[in-house]
Length: 273
Image (cartoon, rainbow, N blue to C red; front, top):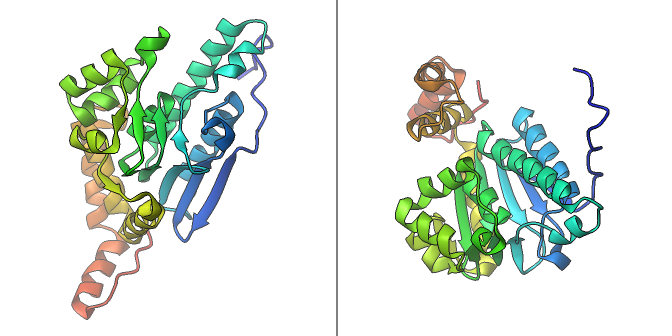
């Protein structure tokens, strides 16, 4: 494909995304604490590359998204970036398109994704969390989608993720009012799976991620594909792809290993094949 000479050059890497591997778990940390981890264009570019690399890699099995510092997961867009260029409207359009690409890459990742949320989780932070398979929050977490107070609106895809998690009534309230929800409210409406004391969040998420990473990868991926299909996502091959993924589990070396480990009363060692 020939590059469009009129297209804007890609944003430069910022160094404000950190990656950490813990066994078969990869942590992707949004690390701009001075701005409550607000997402700049460069951070989105770096994160998108990290998500795609993880998705294509066979080494790590679970991706955890987290925020650096003590006060935020992701607080939304780095709005100051739009004020620097001559054409703020065009910069904002590019930002929204690239941000949507990041959120959809997280949602489309074939391997499990987890959001570990503390502090502020606003706007794009909620979109990132909703794109993940699982969401665990610290007891200090606060959630808000302030789009209606900024004159913006979520795309149908992002709005659907919120509706899938919370149901239409809670999603309407969240999107129409733009109000803040504390972690207890978020758990009550289904936006997060569970709440932990802030000091325990990272340890508990690491434990859950490690449990998932130790299970049979083909089985976990088949379950993820099937759930997406049941939620009406037709972009992953439909029912036929689900049935093929399930059949692949039955024919796998991991299934033989699982049976042998059960019979021998030991922990299985799965290879993902």
